[in-house]
Length: 137
Image (tube, rainbow, N blue to C red; front, side, top):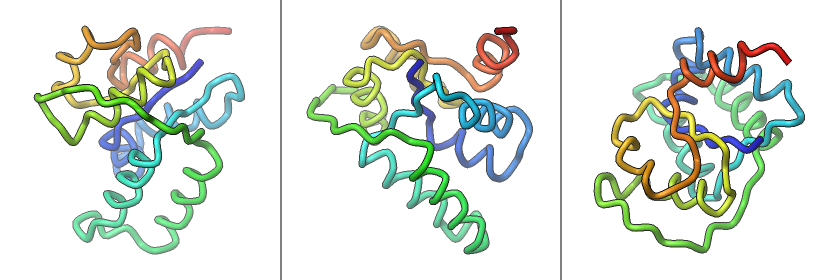
């Protein structure tokens, strides 16, 4: 299974725990799940986690940056999909298409309009947890 994870879910996992953190732990512990990112997505993760407003201590940022390096599969994206609803989020749609991802986990309602552009299921953290994490093997 291939999954993409929106930046807002990553931030929630770090700051709030609960379902986002459980989903990350589930994905990290499953060799059959591939967390797909593009270089641009990885760059966004790092930039957002480094924002002063989150006040993350250096050791926490370093821990997460190392986990990102270990847990993600970076793919090159040579596709340009027009998503005028939110241009800065195009990179997630493009990556999902190129990777043929099964799921895109996000809390951003803007992506609901992107569903018609891809085969990837756009899903909330809670729904992913219910449908995938909590499902018995």
